Length: 362
Image (cartoon, rainbow, N blue to C red; front, side, top):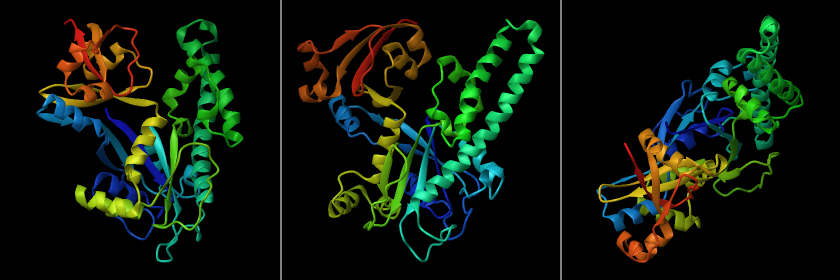
């Protein structure tokens, strides 16, 4: 399954424009709330210039990039946690993603209405954040009540795994609930590994990593400082939509005119990878050059398992060289001749940019 990122925000913040630019898929966009009622999903290639270079060296028949799934979710309004607008439907969809992108409106356009009647990205962010916290508070409170009832029902068998799990969940929720009541996010609550595992099934919205896209004017006149410490990206969704309509050559020319080296969309995808502590490794040969995604800190057998579970079960060793070294030498044969392809075992931690050939037994 590809990484899944939900795009959320108030109506007319630029969510669907951003989604269209990301996926080059036209979704309904109109000057009124709730144009996007059902979530739209688009699969996007993760930009990585190393792929083509490796494919050239290996004379690969195919290039297969890694992908990200973006979900354009219906506009949120104040009161969504209690069912306002498309509240419950919105919240159900957002629970299913791995991370969240908050789009706040930083652009001024009198022809595009704002549901609150004014442009204030700080307030937009606070509205979204508050609704997510309130929705989580309802889930956490009910879950805590149910877990306590369960422990009472299992009092006669308090040493059972089921009873132990219920007590672990209670311990976690007794930390999370007061934090939510104080306006804090669940992700900022310190939990033990067992407590974190116990709450995973609740799919708390504020337990998900997030970043913020400030949808600015083409030439932003204000430098909005949003009240958060997570990733913040100023992006003109209008410019990104224009770039998405151009050919690669035209896009490069336009970006040069704008004085930007990397599109906002590429920055967004790379920021999402960093947010989720993901890295990319490669396999490369005559048949194909392919990018693979793995969690930072993953060991060689785990990386092998991303390709196929049989690779992880039968893992023997991994032949590894970093991309920069391979590109500098120009061929795998040259790298082998210089003894620069290493043989690593089960404890090797895969690095971003590693080119790997796994040895395994069936």
